[in-house]
Length: 417
Image (cartoon, rainbow, N blue to C red; front, top):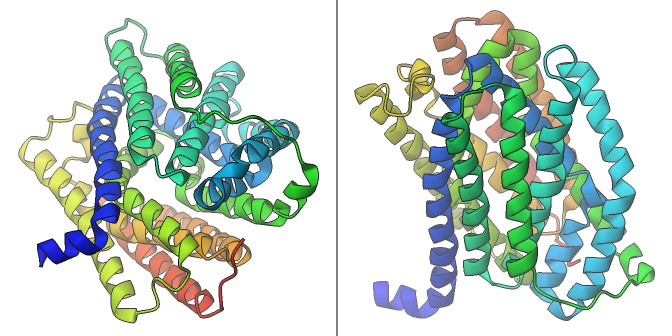
C-alpha cells in the first residue's frame, strides 16, 4: 500500500516533505524566539508588542493592494510572465504606501496612543508591513515555482535571525519595548537582504499596465479578503487590549502564540492543496475526502496543543517564568487551534477556486462575529479559566459558520483566473 501511494503521489509527498521540513525547522526556532521574548518582557509589554505586531500584519495586507495574488498565480501557472508581474507588484506597492500609512495612524490613535511611543509603534509596523511582508512575497514566488526547499530555507533563515535577535535581547540589560525594536528592525532587515540577494528568482522587469487591469479585481478582492482574514485572526489581540488591558492581552497573546505553533504543518499542507486546486478545480468533490481532511487538521492541531499543555503541566517552568503563568490553564483551550486552523483552511479553499469575492464576504462576517463573541466572553467571564473554556465555544461557532459558508460557495462552479 505504501509503495502504491508513493508511486502515485511521489512528487506530491516529496514536495510536502520539503515544505514540512522547513515548517519543522521554523517550529523549533519559533519556539526559541517566543520563549526568549515572552520571558524578557513584562506581561504587559509582551501584550503591547503582540498587539502592535498583529496590527502590522493586518496593515501588511494593504501593501500592493493584493497584487501578491496575481504574482503567485503567474509563478504557479505562467512563470514566463513573472518579470512583467514583478513590475506590476512594485508599482502597486508604491501606490499603496500612503493608504497603509494612513490606516496605521488611525490604528495607533485608536488603540496605542498613550500606551506605546509613536516611533516604537512605527518601527514595529515597518518591520511587519515592509520588511517581513517583502520576504514573505519572495517565499510565495518560490513556492509558486515549486522551489519548495528554497522557500522553506528562506523562512527558516528569517525566523532564525528573529530568534537570534530575541536571544541577544534576553541577555541585554534593557528589556523595554523601546530597546527591543532596534533588534527587531535589524533582524527583519537582514532577513530581507538575504532574500533579495540569494532567493529572489531573477527576471527582467517589463511594465505592462493593460495586462494588470485584467487582474486588478482579483488582486483587490484578495487584498480585502486577507485584511479581513487577519482582522479576525490577529486583531482579537487589540480587542483584548481594549477591553481587558495590557496584562490580560499578554496572557491571551501567550496562549494564542502557543496555539499558532500548531498551524505550521497545516499551512504547508494548505499551500500544496491550493496549488493542486488551481490546476484541478474539482479536486475536493468527494464529501468523504473533505471530512477526512477536516478531521486530520483538527486532530493534528489539538494534539499539538495537548503536547505543549502536558509539557507545561509536568514542568511549568520549561518555557520560562512568564509562560508558566498559563501552565495550569493552557489545556482548557484544547479545541481552539483546531477550529482556528480549519477557518484558515476554508479561506484557502475559496482562494484556490478564485472565489475571492465570496471569500472576502465570508471573512467579513466571521470577523464581525468573532469580535462580538470575544467581547461578550471577556465582559462576562473575567476569570482566566472561565474565558479560556468559553474560547473553545467561540471558535467552534466560527468554524461551523465558516464551514457552512465555504461549502455552500463551493457548490458554485469555480472560474480560472
